[in-house]
Amino acid sequence: MTQDLTRRIGANELIYVQEVLRTEFRSSSGSTFMRRLEEAFAKRFNSTYAISFVNGTATMHSALEAMGVGPGDEVIVPPLTMSATTFAVLQANATPVFADVDPETFQIDPASIAARITPRTKAIITVALYGLSPDMDPIMTLAEKHGLKVIEDNAECFLGQYKGRLVGTLGHCSSFSFQSSKHLTSGEGGIVLTEDLELAENIRKVQSLGYAGVGATKAKITKKDIQDPDYPRHVTMGWNYRMPELCCAVALAQTENIDALIQRRIDVANIFTEATREFHDWFVPQKTGPEYVNSFWTWVCRNEHPSVSWHKLRDAFLVNGGHGVYAAWKLTYLEPMFEKLTLLGRERFISAENISQYKAGLCPVAEHLQKRLMQFKTNYWDIAQAHKQAEILRKTLNQFA
Image 1 (cartoon, rainbow, N blue to C red):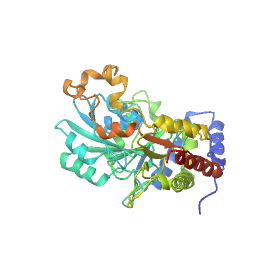
Image 2 (image 1 turned 90 degrees about the vertical axis):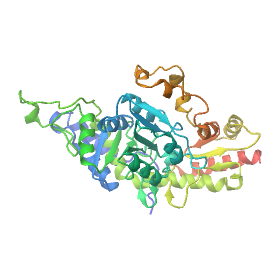
Image 3 (image 1 turned 45 degrees about the vertical axis):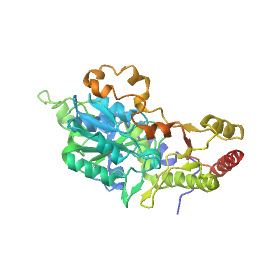
Image 4 (image 1 turned 60 degrees about the vertical axis):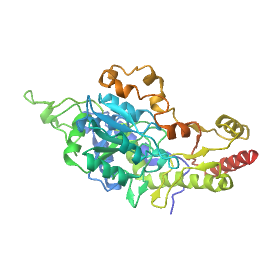
């Protein structure tokens, strides 16, 4: 039975935050909620190792570093997503290579990935866009054939399923975000899941300043070690990407309520789907196949009306009382940072051949979709508001039918 949600933040979030504050951030009390969060999140996803992070970009950067990705290596990514996925590749001094997407699911296309693989390819980052998994089996087959690592970027997908398996357990590791708009939130934060012990050990060291005393399931150096003048602290280069205890406390409480929080978004998406069904010939929802469970970070449609533009439809929705419409991100390779090569020095690691590809025409399907996708909120805690907004959208679409 679905829990009745009236607020996104419940009682346990406040209780846990107060517990942290009562410690006055003494180092002897540090990482208690980090450990509890990592254990709870791993358990819910039937995963062995979970490592928390300050955000959901540091997660992917750390995974790439832990995999040995660096200058001269290529990482295949989709262009139709938030640019942080590509930023992680650049932060590792590697080269992003953009694969096109499927016109119906909007997910990275395995055939386009296959066409982009070169001897320099080291990894693939998939994105479960809007809450739906990509077609992972052919992607993993490609990875095995070419000796590549696969990172699942699941910032927008919690408890989505692919052929009966949880999204986040399909690649070599997976990344989730606790940023404020996501299914679960602590304001900021992220977490990585993996089954690979060596990879988990390496990711933790990247996350935690290369400390010798941390590991796959150990997030904190002991006081005995750190107070020893002969203790060799740093066994490798690393970053300070650890998630603060206050954020861990909130994320733990959210994880404990994960099923209800995700079900609410699914319920809202279903309300929008039913309200607009008569217009789906031109206002086309993201295709969710029978072997998929979409967790609906947003409910998204492709506007293929021959004479009604994105802006005209958006404006009519607002006039009718709609809360607003979100656009898809500008394709990453068409952002000014690629046009002007303002990559904070990372451009020196990218070949002239790769740089020449960062222009219109590289991913034609994604370029067509980006100007037509319309995203609608699913995080309504007052379900009556969701019904009202869906009816406003139905009324708006009817004006142009």
